[in-house]
Image (cartoon, rainbow, N blue to C red; front, side, top):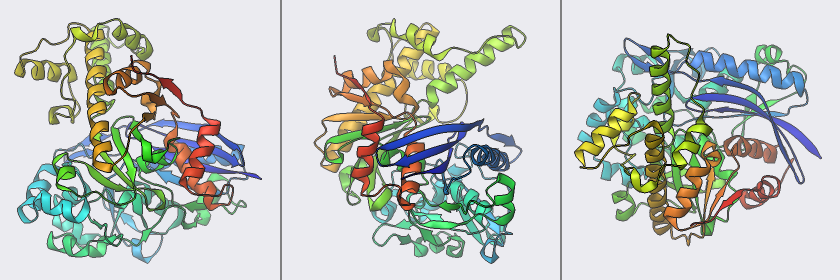
Length: 486
């Protein structure tokens, strides 16, 4: 028996709606919609266009149900930490959003860090939540909120939970994403209400928790009619709503002997373990413990990821357009990477991609030049040189983080699995293998959507078994490409 489910997969730069067909020995996906995700800068800061994303997701679901009317379930995943504040959501489906969610790259989070650490230094927080220090973690963002806005709200929902609420009228917080907020108590998988109240964050804002595979609710009747799902009986199912949690489900690995890299805008480098690792060594290495499907733990470190390359390319395209009155063609990434491969690795610097200067949008080549100047090394001399320097620096950061993850998690790493968009970057995959001294197994590219689909499919009875069984289906249907170290 096979069946179909729909995955709404929202990334930091784009989103998609994918239909998955799943059964015994069957795992197929069809992309029915893709749409951009562009932040909006207003007078008060940088925001997500959340209503635009929701409208695009509805359009995608409409296309999905038109082509595949037997869809049984919908699952939503997105990036972590960002949220919407609502008033009236606890009373049903008519909760009002109190402004567009802030973007995690907005500069306001700095004052939240100061406010939180004044009462609870990071080491104290780490003992409670096991999270690496990232200045945009939800707890810091909430501490930076206008107190009047917090007082007006009754519910806080992370991005995928917010879309699920609009689809169903049910306000819930999925566990894997809740684990990224800094407000989850790992000892019992409950909200740390004492910490929230101590920081002036009303604990009453935190909604009931729900696990991957649980049903969020049926589509609201008007939503079902809008997307053409009126007679399907389709429900919204909680998945690993943090996109990395979904991606790790679809890594075709043996967890006891593999490192994974979920490589897109960010590079999440880690291992899967049974329980949080909150040792002094993990704290010093700034490794995080985030929730996985079936109660697994993702012990990982955030590396700046392909953001540095994509933002560099966007800057060059703006320069080209300005020089040619807006008629310049887009930069061809495969061509650029082929040119970069011709630049000797020894001719470019390896810089620290995790330097905070590379977090905000802006002129990446100038920032690379500044880093090189500060460290007494020669900067790249061409666009291909910058691309090669970025690839080499990412590969080095990934290799180092992978070694640390394996050591902290007690994993005897025999291979590195790269999933996500980075799996298509042959130069990057080869250089990770070279610098790590381990084979790299690249793919699947759409791991996040596949993990989303598989959790839904298991909830629907289309597949059975534990995460290892599900990964076996991925390996059977989506064989990775191997890169051996040279």
